[in-house]
Image (cartoon, rainbow, N blue to C red; front, side, top):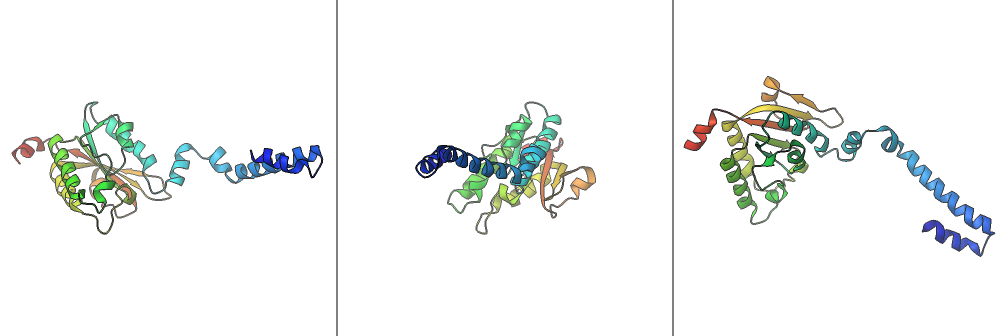
Length: 213
């Protein structure tokens, strides 16, 4: 449309050949320059690299590794809970959520139902006893504010500590390749160095004790 309008505007001022060629040349130059300055995106970087560059503060690429771990270490009918707003993990893991809250933004908003929604999520998790809990240590996955109710954070720390054990941690520091930690390294990781995702597996010995509670 821009080229056509430009050609029409030139028709009465210059020759026909010039009115046709100049707009086309200008368009080709602008398009070529835009492709050139974005050449790394178009021709050099992989899809994951592009995603990580654009969405550096979101665990989209890291979600693939987390989902793969859960898929390979759980039965097809296993239930999972992602503590954060990353529902793509359920999709890539091919596992169902043990709670209806697959996004947690509303739980952090300063609105009258925030605490009730947190309590519902806690109750659903306690009732359904998911095999895996995935904690998203990314601020943008929660969007917690100074006036957000932190009740679910305290609950999670106690609940996960009692009924779950650390299966692994994906340490995804900015501008560095993510590193998967397991064993003692995962257990001693405290999430102080950048962005991370922790994976917790339910302890086999807690089934009886949780019913007694």
